Image 1 (cartoon, rainbow, N blue to C red):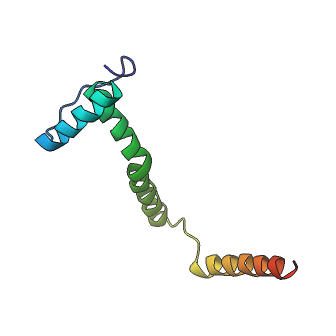
Image 2 (tube, rainbow, N blue to C red):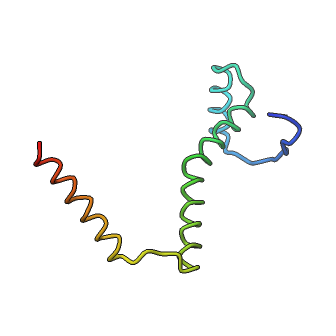
Length: 91
């Protein structure tokens, strides 16, 4: 089992072509198929999976009323743009 005793075995059905590609990558890397799958899952969760979690957290914040009015956001952005423009023209 990968990474200690807290690992939980799972099973998944994959198309033959994906298993063949996994096996080729595993062979080239001299790693077991499960290591390649674990690495792929970690990469997915760090990228797209995290995006899904972040979106859900934002939805939950909005449902609790934890939002900032659009006008405030726009005013803050306009202020930042004005400061950047002033800094740029001062050069």
